[in-house]
Length: 151
Image (cartoon, rainbow, N blue to C red; front, side, top):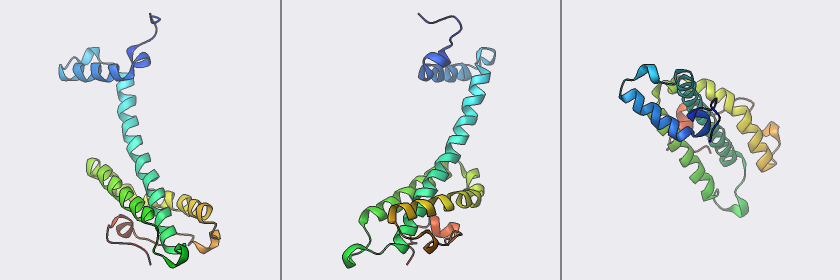
């Protein structure tokens, strides 16, 4: 048995979400857990912003690796890098499709993501950090374009 002070929100989050959705549909506003509901809605927005930034870091890191790390033994760049680049672009586009207002924030997210991507590219490739440009060498359009791969 749960203590009286525990709420469904604290003990079974999924059940709480379903209950809150049912209350909203029934327009039983006075019964809603408004404080936690507001917190969760805000958290969902923050989560999407974080997802964009996280995916940009991985995407830009792989674009840098594609451009600056020589292919092993004269071969082409690893297919896994291209798969990662493609996947990250697709996932970013999905988030932007669901939340188009985040598109306006892309320059800010790119500015935040680039130094982190640069550092990670340096750590993974062991290429000197100074080889990678200090500012992002790619435009927003290039970063998101399926047709763009740096040379």
